[in-house]
Image (cartoon, rainbow, N blue to C red; front, side, top):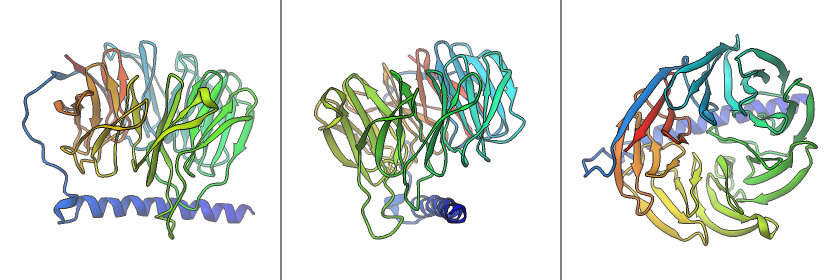
Length: 385
């Protein structure tokens, strides 16, 4: 049994890498103009975007790494084991620690406990002075940031198991496993804790809500169903971070759909759109925003799902998961640019280059602008006027 599981995990990892390689070759090395990244163009600036501060937090970046904002503090980690807490407004470093091992994912934080994960499944928790509290062991590799809150540190491992550790002691509190597909997408995914529930997307196109205390499943909903004859065609993972907006819980999948569920109606789907994203979505009180796998940005109305606007000017620029701020919706791209689009009509408003090559980590909205974790280990605040 253990041998079969291990073989499936290894096969999934190899296939996931193959998907990434194929995507890179087909979309960014092909002479076919259809797949060429759209060139940057000049346009009247609608906002003024600037780098407010930039701080080196370590070395490297990639999938599994995303900054976390708690109050006026931002937490971040890098693959070389560094964990940092900074003042979100000024960029002043409040503390830095090192896990002593290379990391595969981080960070999760509730302002009291900050957690990261190593490639062998080790989960490491620090207190809010940057002192290590405990180490635990997940069932397999962890490639998405832990979720911390309501007394637990939760991780989702590569064998499709979600496990919760006691926030103070590191003791395993509960473990839940769902069957998974042969092949899963390697991209940014995050879990959220809200109102005593851990909400997570799954690699089978489903969203799940789990009671943080008991580990009992409170609700499951289908965003999309796998279709196709091959493992590649059947990839239908929920990507990015589940979005909670008032009574709505929304998710988007690769090669599937975007769906918003109405929690006041037992979690029934309110609307759905056929859609494919490999990075995720963001919402405000009126609209949902996402870039499809071709880099075309869409906005959908939250009340009924109709398309409000579509912007093609950033096609094939490998856009990141978006962040919504009062002035605009922002996306990072493969050259280290952050682009700002009008929330009303999708028009380009401004851009700024933050360096560090491709922006892979999801952008994070703050009261001071947009926080960007770059591929070379910098954390940058982009201010907007």
